[in-house]
Amino acid sequence: MSNHTLPGSYHSELVDTRAFLALDEHAASLRALFLVVLVWGMWRAWRFTIYPSLHPNEPKELPYLIPFLGHGVAFFQDSNGLLARGRKHFAKANEPFALTAFGHTFYVITHAKQSAEVYKNTEALSFEEFVQKLMRVNGSDEATIKNVYSPLPSDKPGFPNPDGLSMGVLAQRMHIHQLFPGDNMAVLQEKARHWINRQVSFDAIARDCGRYATTDSKDASIQLPLYKWTSDYFVQLGQYVYFGDVLAQVDPTYPQSYMVFDELLWKMLYQYPAVLCRDMTNPRDRMMASLRAYFRLPPSERRDQAAWIINTMEDEMKAIGVDDENLAIIVFHLYFAINTNARKTSFWMLSYLLRNPSDLAAFRAETAPAFKGDELSDISYITDTAKCPRVDAIWHETLRLSGWAASVRLVTRDVVIGAKTLRRGNRVMVPHRLLHFDEGVFGADTASWRPDRWLESDAARKLPSSASWRPFGGGKTKCSGRFLAKFFVTAFVATMLRRFDMEMVGEPPMPQPDIGRPVLGIISVKQGGDYMVSIKKRRDGGEGEGVKS
Image (cartoon, rainbow, N blue to C red; front, side, top):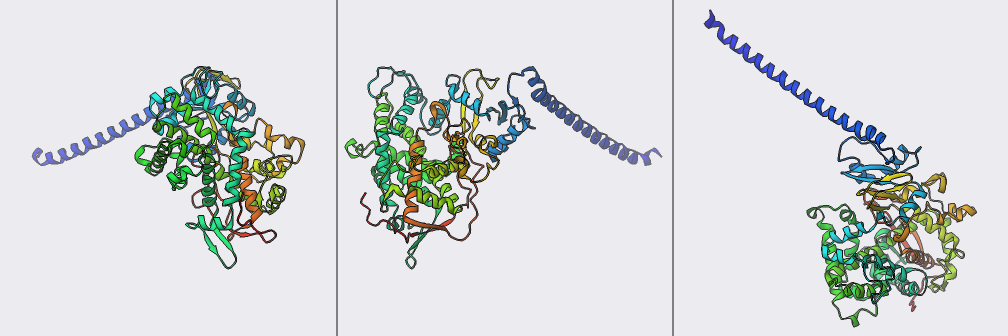
């Protein structure tokens, strides 16, 4: 009997054993899951409840679910959307708050007065870290970086250095010396005026833009993609003003390489692995090589055409032992600082004007006295706010709607901002866009294009001096090129409207900004957002032929 029942008993015992093991594995999984949830709950309670209660003087942190990752994904997808959500979450406190992205903690400043504190405190909050990081990413060695950022004697020869600053910081003063309104900037404005008068003509556009524009001889019109065209022209303009024709002779494709690089600049800012950003590093490396070739030319072949700042930076950098390779890297940073924002600003300004005919007509009428016939003749008229208040309002409104950058500083020692202690080693961020969309300052319709907001009252006319207005950053690192950029953009647009009638081809929607990519000022247009425009010589005055200026 037992011999007949043994197989069944064995099978039953085997099934029971398997069931027991399965139950045991299930229980182990539940225990592990419970442990994970417990640890996660303890971490979350500590991070967002206990620690803040023990350290009430530190900024509260915007809660997140996954340790280390934090708000990293949201930060990459739409950083300004994330920051706006954080401001709303802490709206009642009106104080700095913290957020974590991929293990890094950022303190976010959204109050105008607190942002002023950030810009003033250059001892505890450093901008140099950002510049030095760019130098490393683009190939500078540590010895050069240390050399460039080591204090120099106050009695050194060359450019005055009464405060004993490093060459890296002194370079900012050189920029101000060249670019602040006055005789030095007027030299660059005259070069720009000459280039605009020569190149913004029907024949020049038809000739130089043939690779992407089409000319209709029947109605004497040219159709071309607006973003591509303004980018192409502004990079050529900036290059000519600073380098003359020489850099173009060294490398005729330099502007095209730059435009490819600039659209992929976000990969450099996010420090993508080299294997994932060849499309950005290849044009960058070509441009670096061309700059090295430029500086190896005999000085007699290039310095007469170069801007004062280019020649002076070469002299000063070589005086402290910077070689040609590292000099090319430093000047390359200046090149993209010159060109990254003006080209985009002109695109957005024209895009808004084409959709708001009354503003376009006002811009055209107000700038007319700057011209003799169809030649731009007066370099100061268009940027004179008393003579061209409407142009000034359109300029400000364009910057307000298309500015997407933030000022970032490294906290080098503990410091109190807005009654909160910011800890050493973290970063503090001032998102300009949130300041520019403050309804308490700029009105309830901040998402809309409305240049009148800058003109409709005495308070409105004072907005450009408001602490909430930061399109160019602030403090000692405020963009020194802001005055020349305004001249470039407004002079170009004024000349276009003086010489041509411009209209959109079809009815394209307003282009969308590429909000997922970081920028150093003005936002790029989302891929596929460029659109065609048609330009014709104006009937009531024509377009300048054979301009000699």
